[in-house]
Image (cartoon, rainbow, N blue to C red; front, side, top):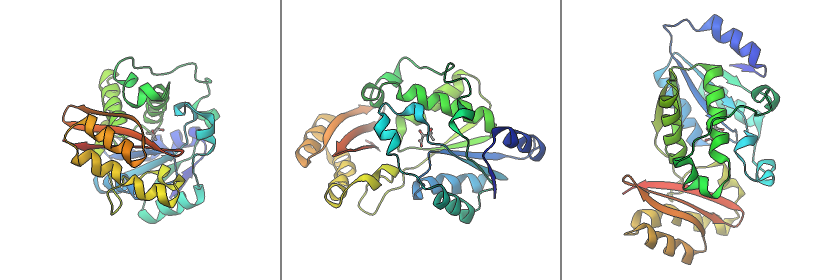
Length: 253
Ligand code: PAF
């Protein structure tokens, strides 16, 4: 497995190793890898000649500095995991390389990104879309894999790629869950055992409730601080907090 900390070296490698005919799959991550990430990686490995993964905790998508600083991460463990699963290349860029322009240029969407998670996390989706655009331009994959757990993010990325005529196929992968239904997430590590037990109700109550309002009410009764529960285009999407941990999930209704 090749590891690139320099974006210039990656670009040279990209140009020399991937002629047009070969397909390159890409998974963007912020590290703290779990089976959810690995399912994206496996989907890429299965359908592409080469798979590249980026590990970059993007500071621009955090509305809270503390949350960014506390974001879990263990690069050595991530690299081991990626090597074991058979990834070809890993990009570990520095913030100064991704944002050499000091974030003067950014992607901004002014409709769907302002709702749901965007209404509660100022600037979050500008940060996500900007880093995804930069990473896609840097990696130039044929296929890029994103999880359905972050459904709003996935939808916005699809729409950005279409709006900017970007030559990449966005592949959606299903949410990977723990045995009790909790969607796998790097944030799950931040919960104590009582919060972890309660967390499974997010998925259960989204599925079982007859309406978004009922789900919000029942989540509140279980001890969640609900940011939102909304039904949109056949899906029920939610974000809710348990202590310091913000959880998101969505189900087909
Ligand atoms: O879903 C994530 O982990 C991040 O939002 C992403 C897509 C890697 C961009 O930083």
